[in-house]
Image 1 (cartoon, rainbow, N blue to C red):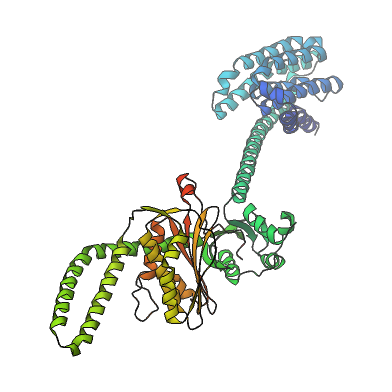
Image 2 (cartoon, one colour):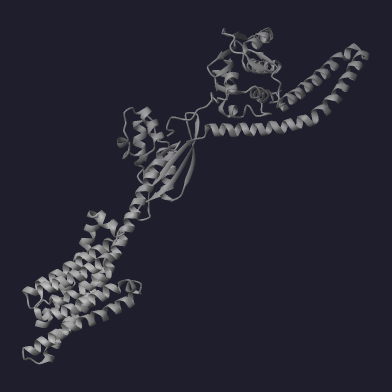
Length: 582
């Protein structure tokens, strides 16, 4: 039992670094940055050197006060400190062991202390080579070194026992216990070194991953906040957990003084109610599908006449389960308008190619037919005159359609005059008045300044005004009124043709500028397409606004020549949405 107590006490004091290294490593890593810098950041090696030195000191101190503690057992932590501590600490540990042995041992032990210091010095000199060995070979070599280094101490015990008159073999159990204690403590020290090193590595990896995660989260937040569209993050209960600057600005306009903290935490329906609106059922349905079915969702939305695209993507928690969704909304009104215009341009291009290839071939035979009909008309009895008149009128009508085809196919026009829009309307005014009087309608040309001159082809602009005015006159019933006006703004010149007719439905309005689309019984569907082409060739854009039962306003907006010449681009028709479309 006594030997067992000696064994436990020896193991505990020899393996003191096992208990000290974790705390010392944390202290070194957090409180001694300069020391870390000198030793290339090896906080575990520094802690092991300090812990080994402290263990050597405690073993020799207790050796002086208790017969059960043998200070020579500090040879083990000293050797471990030399082998696994920092390289610059190996010789100081040898010197410290020699000093402690000299101070706390008896004169009889000094010879053995010198031998142990020699063994420690040999280990220090062989450290570099042992570090390069495999872990198994290094451990085996260290155990052999420990047994050899312990031989002087074992010889001291045998000699001491012989001097006391006892049998030499009686000390062998004590020697065996000390050897076993050394081996046990050595194993504990070895595995503690690995454990501390592994924990240090994991701690460094965790710190690196934490920094990367914070960095990525910061980037993600910055990216989300600066998105040009509206962006929100929501949890599985549709509660807002994040909002970007664009969406926050839209809500701030509806809810002045609101803060992000007040927005975050509200359900989407509550947020929309507070903003004086209602959550779009399509949005809530898409959010539910994205979270429930764990998939990306794309949805089209309309709000106050504008079109939007909604994109929802599920987000995941630590367990890998869906815990919400990221929502981004972009206005596509202008994109849809451009797509429609592109399709219209493609159709116009096709029509132009057809017109260019067949117009001259059709027009020449028609001219021959018309000429011979006029000759036959002069030689025919008068009672057949009205028949010839009908045929000639239809030929003229066909010729007008061919002219429209040619105008529609034209892509370049010589802008050979500098004129004002008002001067063009004034030249046409008698003709427009006569046309309105024949139909029993009122026409009015609003007063205004002449405005800036613009390069134009007067014939085409006249055709544009006539087509728009006649479309409006044909659309109105009795007592209708047509109002024509010209305006000048900082960036554009505008021509407006407004009537109080029956108006145009939304379905018709979407297709009204398409070639061959018409609501008239005898129309060709080329009139508005021709007008749009003339406007575009003059650097303008044709827009139509209509309300069923109230009337229609057609506005052609031409960019000013001074603005175009300076290279400044101004979009005077559409702008990006500033309102949250939900």
